[in-house]
Picture (cartoon, rainbow, N blue to C red):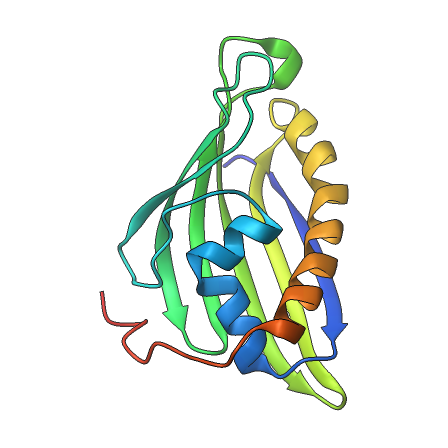
Length: 157
């Protein structure tokens, strides 16, 4: 069995879970805090993130919604990278899990991005570790402005 590594981030945001949920599950808002995408909050939905290519990486991340329980849990696969350039490591086959827990003063946002295999994914792990922290700050800012609207069909694929 291979040993995997995870990026874990926890941050209390001064917004209710409903507003953070909308920011995590609305394609247009996701594009503002992460990357352009064709996300839909439905289990089984396959979607892509697209950004500027870097080195041999084409800038595309292939994903699939694995779990969706509004406004508490969102999990999706995250596959991307390049096998052709050792400088950027090997292809990443991982999962991103967002958990929202109401707390006094707002919501505890917990992110776990798991599945980094070293040494091949070390470059991606190091680059994404600091990046996810900046993403949490952008989610907090966007959630303050987000109108509350939860799609009750989210968990139905």
